[in-house]
Amino acid sequence: RRGGSGGAGACTCASGAGAGVRAAAVMQKTHVLARWPHEVDVVLSALALEACHTNTVHQLGTTVAVLAGVPLVLHVRECHLSVEVYVFAWGRIAILVFLDNVVTGAGDVIRSMKSQRVPFVSQSGVQMQVEQFAYNRISNMFPPGSVAIKIETLLRYIRGDSPCRLILTGFSLGAAYATLVLAKCFDSLPQSKLLQSLLVRGSLVMFGTPRVGCQAFSDKLQADALAQELQIVSYSTQASSTRDPVSNHPSASKNFGMTRLFRHSNPVTPLSVPSVDDEKKLHDVLLYTRAIKQQLQQTKPDFWHSLFP
Image (cartoon, rainbow, N blue to C red; front, side, top):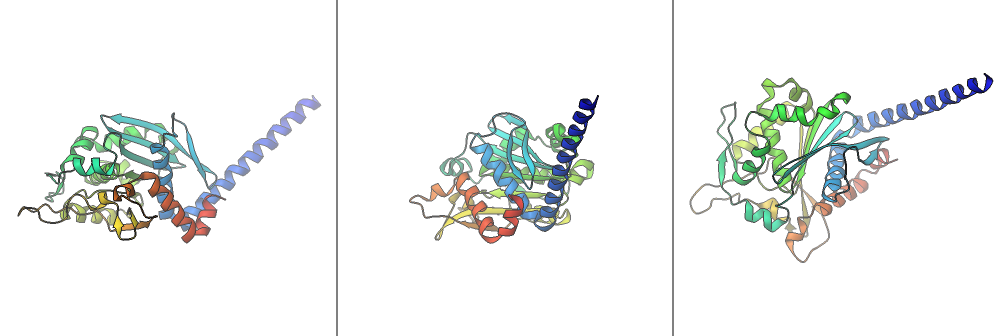
């Protein structure tokens, strides 16, 4: 009996120690989010993107990294034609990563996006146009009117943790897809309480994104983001005076007398990287993720050490 009692005591102590570790992790995460919420979203996006593009997430349930004592875990992977969506969770934050597994290099993206525009139908009645190639690709996975149901389906495996907000991210065409899905989400807000809760103080984090829509599309996206207190950030690698060529495509100027104006959804933040012998080499996801991590380590060391103690 004495031995049994001692064993139970040992289990209780172990359980208590585990609870203490979990409580410390929660406190650390709360502290980091309170001081640096936007920076956290950028790092989560970069780490999730890096994992997807380097094929280090081989199966569902894979832990990509541990930030402030909390694991970043892959929960869902879905593919439709060439478009892939990965769903990660960090505590109660859900991260949707978009990518195109066929059109990847700078030259491929520029050749595919031929500056053709199609209407973006909105319940608001605002007349908007977006780039045709990206819109058609993402609309195969997210048909008009289906975005709320689709997001709920993608998050079904982590609903037990009650996701409190949403980050959408992507590189290259994936960033364009993330932008278009966010616009669809904003358009569906009146019909979806889930989206209403997820988008408040959420984020759209874009790496190497092409231009997606016209001025009206960009203006409405920014206005909707402001109303939801949602952060939109866009990064482009830059070596000397040369910028990732995909960030300058499609054209933002008039072409052959026809107005083909495309705009970024938000001002683009340059990421300084070493010089390259070909500007197309600037369009590299690992170049982006390394640069953003290095920048944050150098400019916000307190944040970085709090996230990775």
